[in-house]
Image 1 (cartoon, chains in turn red, cyan):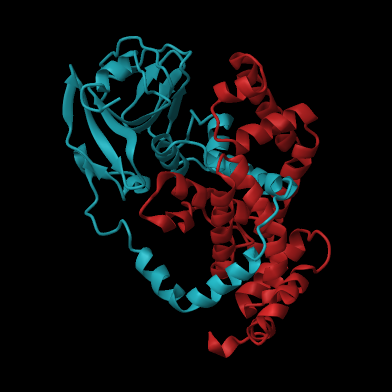
Image 2 (cartoon, rainbow over the protein chains, first blue to last red):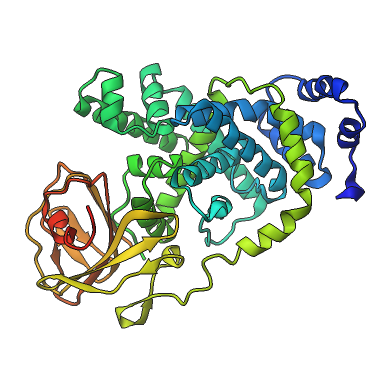
Length: 215
Length: 225
């Protein structure tokens, strides 16, 4: 690792504590919302060059979102941030395991966060079941084709989500992020349980129709 | 293997979102290993998770959070390679448990422990599967004799049943190896195992803490429900 003393790292190490904060801030303020291609490029730079500027961009974009996701899943604020920090640490360590043929960056990070949250809630001793890769034993298509398929899947899911009504999108968000049972969601929205269930079913049905219409 | 009975979208979404409890999640793991269609759905729902993650209102991080992660990176960089290699062998040490007829447990359950077969009713035996990630989880194998008819039953939570060996039929069709039967609590059904051979299923209940149905009474004696 010492052979890879990249600029940002040595810069931080050589900076007096009083100036460190400013440097960290500067590292993190690099431009606007990154798109999918930029995100995979940032991951590649972290994987290949341990590039801390790239990592800072990823962190500033994802850490607050992962924290927010974990809070919505019912974790208290401090636990949510703690696990989000772990998630971002995994992003650094496992950047080379990121496979653009399998998923987009946001999807990959989402699955890391999901798995660490599950581990946390089950207090598993096998903590890194989190990073176990799911079964995949299908024959592999040529990689250009796969990349296109992944990009299409990511794009079509986003498009489908965008064309749901606000109410349906809210139901999808709620049932996706919250670990609450439908009965609790029903209470929260002051709706009968049957109504919540049928709305979830309808929203998912619409999502499926939209996704199938595009493919 | 053609799959005729799949998991519902709602279940696959909960699985992808990490909301499904451990035991039903394992049943889905087994189903996914043989069902490309459901795997593709899960990938879509994971992509949905990615999209929702990007759209979410970002939370404020506490001051110094980024610097703390950088310190953690510096502190742990050296040990990464070791931990990765040692953890990859977890779950491989145990000899795989066998089902009758010399068939191994599904790959997705290789890290689990399988209890002894116990008689729990005429023509019905069950074995409790213990999960390393959740000792409280209630996952079991059911082994029902050829031609056996189970009394009509409903259940409190959703019942997930994945056919491993043999086949059964109920009001909703015939279930062959690879098929998943997902029965909501509002549904009453009466499965009948086909005549040719006994049927072995992997079964889990979601939210079944106060079971009154047949399945619940069946397993009550030896799992603490």
